Length: 107
Image (tube, rainbow, N blue to C red; front, side, top):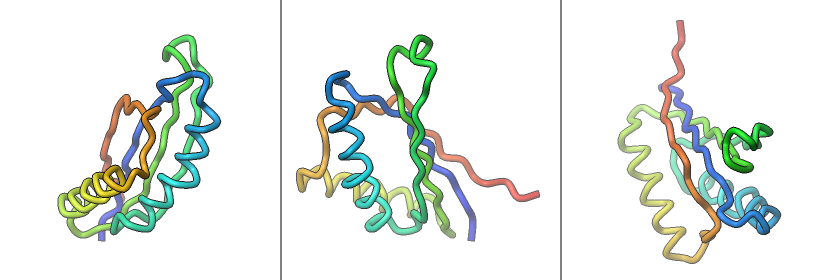
């Protein structure tokens, strides 16, 4: 079993909706991912404090994934996200800045 991290940097498109954005991310989105994306074990969110350099408040979500097949896991994850969007469990205030998938290196 391999361990991976999915790093997702986001921002709220509307500076007046941060509370709503964070509530959705913490109470809807993360549970949707952890409950319905196989292999996703945990999630931790961070907020940047260097807003002058980043052009506003940005957030980083770090998801820990355990899998024997990262391609299949990420395919299932993408399908889960699309299903949640179709169900209306999404927000129009989300802007994804960057995504990075990293394998944990065990020496």
